[in-house]
Image 1: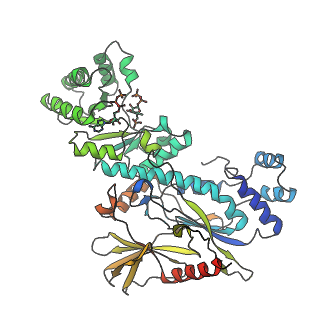
Image 2: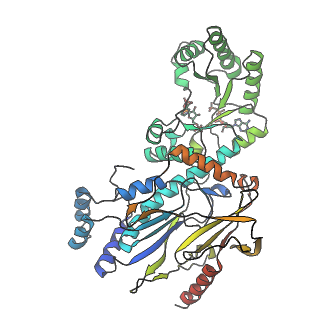
Image 3: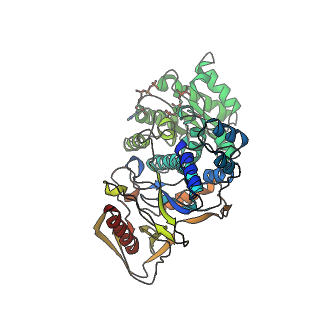
Length: 484
Ligand SMILES: Nc1ncnc2c1ncn2[C@@H]1O[C@H](COP(=O)(O)OP(=O)(O)OP(=O)(O)O)[C@@H](O)[C@H]1O
Ligand SMILES: O=P(O)(O)OC[C@H]1O[C@H](OP(=O)(O)OP(=O)(O)O)[C@H](O)[C@@H]1O
Ligand SMILES: O=C(O)c1cccnc1
């Protein structure tokens, strides 16, 4: 994203609305937009937010270049005045966001933009594009990594990602979600994450026979020698040939680094068990048994339950495309606008679907942790000026099921605010951490959930409540607007 001209990475309607605000003179009116999502992907119990670094780069680089201006002029849609205004366009507003790698829940503002409407409107499409994609893949990766129960998972999806950006940023997000590294070398370079890999069938096929191919590979990469054993016959030739090469390496004193095999077809549970026995009998019990082949979290969980002897996983297509759930569903909704006196007036959007009625006003998110376990008890979406007094008892309800209430006794919990300032008056005030540090943070975030929240299917749901004041405001606006 850095260094790319992305001002036109938007939907046409953002620009036509901007011209409208400009023409009616309303363009300087400040508004607040929330970016949030409504449903966890893949039936998960949480999502992992990702993409903030690319949002920061986008905002910092947000300018209409001469080429952009020429193109917009050529559309014959925009007035000269508006085009002139775009020539000096800069983001001058405020952005608060929940840091990348945080565990988040539906309806929580992941990002809150306060800016003149003409600026805040332009950001909508690009912000959604960036956050939706990376949060989707980070969440999927988190599921896959959870299924692997502590075994490392390598991200292998670039070749089947939906284009270069989805491959590069998807691999970044997968690492945030917990993958130990990626085969994607550009992601490795750009984000300083480990690059990993084995070799392809073409390597084996390019030699007269399998053992020659294995020997050549072992000679080149003795410290990271994972041999793909399924080109001809996994148990009859692949594993025996790999063992022969490991014996030769051992005899030559070359077996010092990581070594093992990769299975890429057939019954992975059965083959891994057989391969494990063969390797152990040959004295190579510590060999890595890695596997790939259309894997996802459900298959990995199934292979684990079948007792598969796999201890390194390569996951490509189904992770990088989030194959079972191709969209995150984040939205960007107007929550407040400034009146003539400089006061922010809350706004609401109604819907026949109660889950789609927006939460009005300028909001923040409190997270309640249990003092003894450091696990999340609940989240509370509140209005900007609200505070939580940790010395008072609290009652949290599930906003989807108000009859479900949780009583938090003073002294048993502590509170953290999730939204932090990223831009103030158009200036960046937050430094994005390195990707591997975001991964470490994300790992600690997942420890704040119970296994019941983390499981793949029908997880327990962390309650997310609206504060009393926010609920009252919402109900009042629903009453007012529904009689409109
Ligand atoms: N023990 C197992 N239990 C459940 N699914 C498995 C097991 N072993 C492998 N699989 C999955 O079954 C599918 C088999 O795919 P497919 O029918 O294409 O054959 P393949 O063995 O991958 O062959 P090839 O790569 O030669 O096409 C893959 O998604 C794989 O991950
Ligand atoms: O199955 P995925 O989760 O998408 O993981 C990546 C796949 O990509 C490779 O296959 P491919 O057939 O493209 O090349 P190869 O010749 O190296 O097997 C690799 O062998 C995996 O099977
Ligand atoms: O290094 C590997 O084994 C690899 C890389 C990309 C895709 N499939 C496998």
